[in-house]
Image (tube, rainbow, N blue to C red; front, side, top):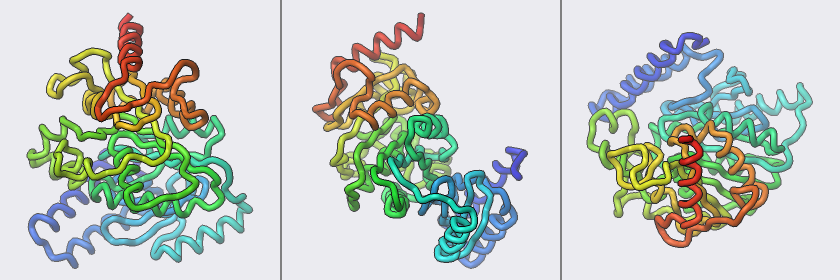
Amino acid sequence: MFSDPRLAGMLLVILLAVNRAEAQFSFPRQFTDRAKQQLLEEFDMQTLGGRQFWGDVQFFHGWRIQRNVFSGNYRLLDENDWRHASGTLEVCQQKLAEIRQERSLPPMSGKGVILLHGIIRSSKSIYTVSRELRKAGFAAFPMEYPSTQVSIPEAAELLDSVISHLDGIDEVYLVGHSMGGLVIRAWFAKHQDARIKRVVMMGTPNYGAEFADLLRKNFLFRLVFGQAGQQLCTDTTGLIPTLPTPPCEFAVIAGGRGNDVGWNPFIPGDDDGTVTVRSVQLAGASDSIILPVLHHALLGNLDVCRCVENFLNTGRLRATGPAEPVKTSGEVPEGAETEAKEHAKESSS
């Protein structure tokens, strides 16, 4: 199923078009709901695992229950994205209970990490970090959420469902890439859980993304990135300034070149090609680091993985040396800046 990526891409384009037609041209809801459901049923055995139209609401080891953003229906997927049930939440939960009993699956326990991807990405993009954390003994849950179809606060409600259903997990850690970090902050605006211990944000535009400012009025940007894309802007009256700082220990990881130019000439200062280093530096972070890595490459970089693992285990990003806390909004700690320049020299030599 979906051995041809062009088929998957075609479905993505069709569903986006149907969704936008409903919103912008007032197509009858009955017609668009039926069209979207028929499309989804046509591609229904082994699935893509979610991508832009499903959001995870519950995990059990590698199993997940998802809700469709269009129809509100639920489905149960295994770790290989094969569908085992669909319909209501209760139907999927009952099927999962039966599978647990039939296969004698053990209950979950220990330390769990929920990983959130950025806008227009999927849980597959955060695979490397998930794999490395599993090697380190964590139960990793790479979460799927329809980032182009829902707002950041709506995505936070999906995260709340996942957290509340992590039965048996003693400690919960949250790791977010790019917009995923903002979803985590939005979750803290309305929810709390005593099991949450530490948070890591990678390339998160904590003060907005200047690159989104440049594109926000572009028709294609609005079409593809949806409401959440508009919320990524550096608008002082927008969503991001209202988001709370995590009340637990948290760290920020930025990509940059260790200079005043960065990779993207269209945004000011050092950057990872998409987000500026200064926007990542959220005041209150107990540790920070700048690595010579592009925005999307943060997800597959092993140095980044080591930093995440170190912080979740010890509260420090580095295996040795002092922490570099962020004390002021947008401040780049002197030690982190010096370190970034050294990394940049090493990578260029």
